[in-house]
Amino acid sequence: MPPTMASGMPTNTSRAEELKLLANEAFKAHKYSQAIDLYTQAIEANNDNAVYWANRAFAHTKLEEYGSAILDSTKAIEIDPKYSKGYYRRGAAYLGLGKFKEALKDFQQVKKLCPNDPDAAKKLKECEKAVMKLKFEEAIAVPQSEKVSIADSIDYHAIGTSPGSCFVSLKVIAVPAAVALVAVLAVYVGTKAALVVAATAMATILVFWGTFWKGRCKDSIFTKTRTLDLDVEPQYAGARIEGDVVTLDFVKKMMDDFKNQKCLHKRYAYQIVLQTREMLRALPSLVDINVPNGKHFTVCGDVHGQFYDLLNIFELNGLPSEDNPYLFNGDFVDRGSFSVEVILTLFAFKCMSPSGLMCELLWSDPQPQLGRGPSKRGVGLSFGADVTKRFLQDNSLDLVVRSHEVKNDGYEIEHDGKLITVFSAPNYCDQMGNKGAFIQFEAPELKPNIVTFSAVPHPDVKPMAYANNFLRMFS
Image 1 (tube, rainbow, N blue to C red):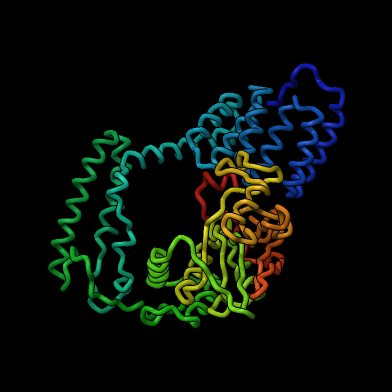
Image 2 (cartoon, rainbow, N blue to C red):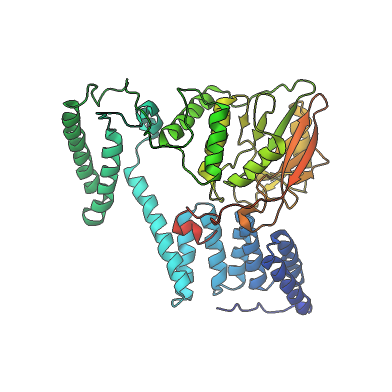
């Protein structure tokens, strides 16, 4: 539905329209920051046009600046309460923040304004499913004090095959069965009754399988510790870990298999994840690293599941090792469709060389203004050069290196040279056209040496290919 204009139109509306068209072209070229600047100029020329606000909200969403997108789309709705795209843009931004209930309200309004729009109906339906899923999770949730990690019940030695092997995990059988039963029964008898029936069924499964397998296995399936050490299937031709030690040869073979779109055996995947978990749990939250004179240290930004670009970083800068340590600033997965390959590779190197670091420290973003302000993301806050300066002085530091923002050149230096943003996922989501970068610091000066690189080809798998339908619709 086309928007209406507020009364008292300014005289420079024609200039605003020209700017909007330029902004639209920049948007089509995936130059979203430029589009935001041009939409801003259009708004300054005519701030009573709902289209300009909604379009700028869309550009903010593309940059994952969901907080700014919500503000802009809300302004579009205030100007024209019947402008469906205002609600649509705000709903999409709420979705990006995981605020499904708020998103549902906006998509319900879109459907009300555009009852015959199949796209609106589809998104409303998916949003309703997400809200129902949240309600279901709330219904079966247990108190935090009673939660137990599934990782504590996994023994990777017991994953495999051997003659006469009888190992079966009851949790693998009973828990999914009970959850599935609750999902079905909740539709017919209500959530509370469904939980009672499912609990009874789960107990029955445990008793039945416990009795059955106890007669066949030497070790009771109820025993917490296991002595089983099963063999990986002989027909598996991929990378293998001999014993409990992750070696460089294994990691190289695994990366080569991943590059050729082959799979890693689940035993080794479990082993890598569980060993990394134990290693990280033993580390303090803040780790000091000494870089000897003549040695260097490399900092990478977001990788976002772009495995083939990660391989390119290693090609350009060498594999992680004791003599070539890396720090990865988080956002290892999602968006790119090779996230499992990325995280297993990074975890494997972590197991092999524990000095390698991975962190998620700074999620708030720098801003050009002094002081603190609301976050354009909708989470955290924004901080100015004075905040950066004070933080460095209070902690006897020289520089902040952070990530989590797409930069056209792969990096950006701000706050009087005291803050660097580094982003290591070139052509983010296969559409942004940005470069990637990493930073090398060499002792004793430890001055940042920034290296930029372009995206490399990868198999024809689109970003978010393995996300659920709901998330894919807004990617």
